Amino acid sequence: MAKADGKIFSFEGEDHIQPELMETFPFDSPNQYIMTETDEFSAVCPFSGLPDLAYVKIEYFPTGGKCIELKSLKYYFISFRNVGIFQEGATKRIYNDLKNVLDTEKIRITTIYNTRGGFDTTCMEGTLD
Image (cartoon, rainbow, N blue to C red; front, side, top):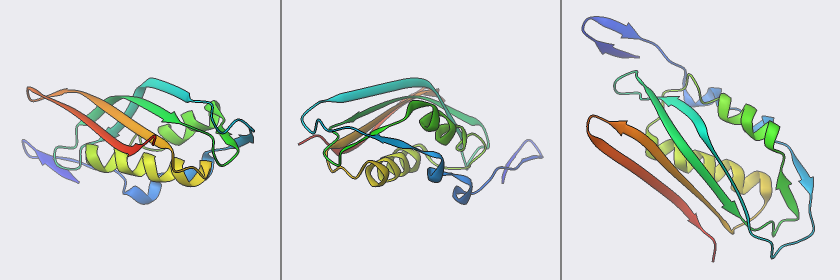
């Protein structure tokens, strides 16, 4: 919950993020680089209660023999929509959830958030090495 000018903004906790929505399909090409991106990610700043909007870039090698199914990834991202989570925490959470579902160590998540208060924020988690 955040307060601004005497108003209270409520939002959900991280337990409302739903990684179980993500589905994969078998893919046997562990050396293929895969990148998917969207500019439709949103969550809520737990400090101000205002929306945080971001471009998300997912890069991985399917060393676990799986690819992410994109419609299910979209539903997973939608589960962040009313969750209060800091930008850095959202990046780490996406990284951990995708790393687990894809069963790969070769994954990198980059988030580039819309300017907030004159500050630009880019977060990166993981490695492709």
